[in-house]
Length: 506
Image (cartoon, rainbow, N blue to C red; front, side, top):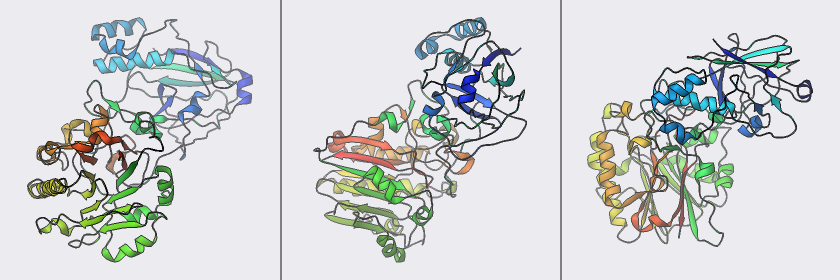
């Protein structure tokens, strides 16, 4: 039987504020720290913008437990409870006791969240009470999390449309209208009372606007956390500290990116203020280079492009810099084989390091290029790097097309035979790069953090953060401690990859 709480809205508050009901079939919305799923008679209304979570918190809810019981404790306390203890606690609270331990923990956490007092912001406040006055809106609260479905199992190269930012939905309701929410297990039913609801309020959902902040992994370990650049990046260096800021991005077609109305190269440069930008998978031809150069942002006067000549409109790399390099090389120049025909490497020499921008070949459908990749390409690139390192340290960056560890991919078990996560590729990555003295800067800085840089277009993988970490900054061990920050920018759309960055103290 559903447990009903009556939510009373003071008439003065209703008159002072317009309140929004978001109507979304089987969608999760976050109000503070509580998650609810809302469905109304099959109709759907959801526009394109959502406000930040702070907006939702400005209309705080005070929830009283209908059993009069208050639950206290930390996440660590819950984690250490046995299944028997969890079930006994849930029974006392009148909550469902079926499911695995992680489901019981989820139910208990949700109960604690729903009974913890929210902070007030401003004069407007809605209280949940046991009285009912006029208009009734019934909401059933989820008591367990839904399992993920339809993960993206392999890499795709289809076009991806931007769908991030804020979303807004409007709907007017009349007296005695009811909004019902579906769940899988026993549901706590809430009844919201008010006189008239004219809905025109922004409702935030941090899960939808910033999905990378939610830990998404099929088999996460206990201490893993989701990467959040807002909270995990170090403070800026003092202005008098000499440093260089490098960004790298697989753009999956430069021309297509530049045509997107939602993308602005100028805004990106102004926001990130990078010194050097490395691009992969530009897909431009030699004949296009001069035209592209004319469109470059002022101040970035030095650009170097490597285009595929064996297959036109394929692969391609570039380095765009406001610092003039001492020298530039294209390809490896070591073997004279087909390695250098696809425009996959540009090397720029600066005063204190070499910068190698590379787009490592994908092993392809059916792993048809796996042998070439691990037996020829990786070894050749490794030898090339070690040769350069004899004169100065090396920074290797780009799309390295390998999720090295299980923490680097959403669904490791389902992708062991997928290009980019085969045992052979992962072993080759370790043997040819990491074991030879190169440091994975992001993993060194964030050892237990799940941060992805690629999301397949199928199944809306980016919206649910079901990704891969394929893009890297590897540096010579001699300069690893000079890395101030190695970071990911998951909020930048326009490609199936997002940019990553490196700040190196000189």
